[in-house]
Length: 388
Image (cartoon, rainbow, N blue to C red; front, side, top):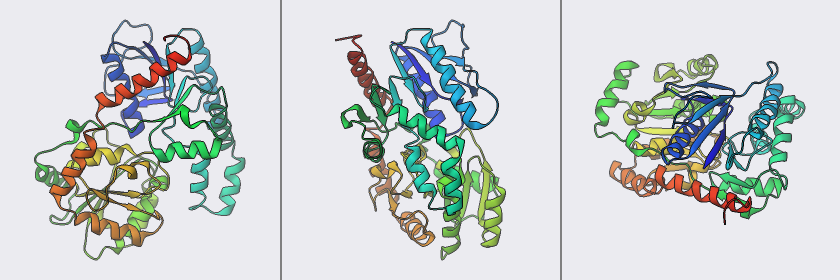
């Protein structure tokens, strides 16, 4: 098949970005002709550009207008449509809110729902500003176009919760939405000598040995719940050290840590391309996001044998078995509840965590994931009359 994948930014950083890169590689390895349309890319791997003969995924740079974010988004959508129409593709699979696709992967969830969740942590005035902000108006309009009758042939949701949101908010037909959970590379994150990785983190960040190591991974700290995590850390009856991995402004959160008198128990790493050693050396992943369709970092932590504490609104909570491989937070804005779930998570027996995670993750391999996607592609090709 000749497959076009649309992702505005193609990079090694970020769970969603790594997912698209891995999907492209896996599809190409199965003999498909894969082309990626992106406005920017930053990857440590050698990737062929447009016009180069190669069996690997080929990158096409999509030009955009420089200026306000909403103009860049609109120009990307318009220009990628023009580029796609110049060639014949069996499948056009978009990971962005665009205007021309066969399949839309709702990996970021519904922007409409995100704004509703965001209003819980912002002032009423900020909520009013958001409603007239050209960026949000643009994203909401484009989202609405996708979920119109002829906006796309199929939607790929990464959780049951994500599917329900689309149906409830846009009355999109349920039978056109397929839930396909994200996969995880278990070999990449598994580690037989966790103590070695733990000692590495102790040395690198000058952490007092013996304290539990909590891990927070994610760019966009406000959405991912770092404020509540820091407050929860300050409530723990005995010391634990939090390592924060991800890209965002650090200064406001470092200041909050100082105000809470926990700055000596918090380390900020900035963005890191290889987070595996951090999962392998930590004792627990804490991720009280206020909105997340399905967080890949939760699966990565599970593959490393960690218990996971995350919020109900995270689709990844659907693979948490409470008391066996983690705990689910009902209110991600409540530091006391987060603190309690952290304590409970640290008490789960290691053999129970590993057995439960293995049982869940054996179904979430890349091979199974690609087969599910290829089945979806075949369904779309039938609807287009390309195959019977």
